[in-house]
Image 1: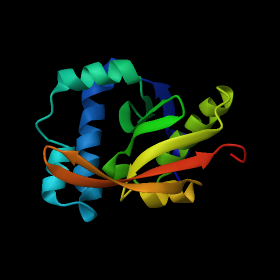
Image 2: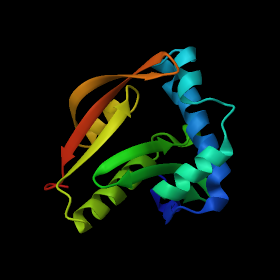
Image 3: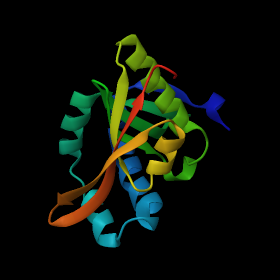
Image 4: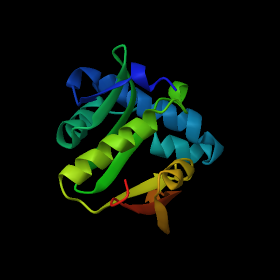
Length: 160
């Protein structure tokens, strides 16, 4: 585990391009074992619009995990819901996901939130299950006429 070298920060616009590239590259490299190329292209289009991402991230204010000024993970969390939750494809299994999730748990407790919900990919589902989440339902999401599978999951916070 390398977690002592990683630190969490609040969103900083200077990392915008790194965040978008992390999102795109992680999906295209890590999720390819569970999704087709067509699904990957729809989900993580390499021809992304940075202005659209800038608006999204200015609103969602993700938490970033940084190593020597490089974004190695990020998550969007608000009102008991985890939206984006990604770890850099080169830093999988280093404790970054756990660090981000524990940060979310801490914030949720401070906000007196009893449960956390997330919609997670096929690939991310085992991580969330190991972290105490249970599947509520399987979803089929359509984007540009391409179907993607994900899972709605939930965890109770009293034991975290």
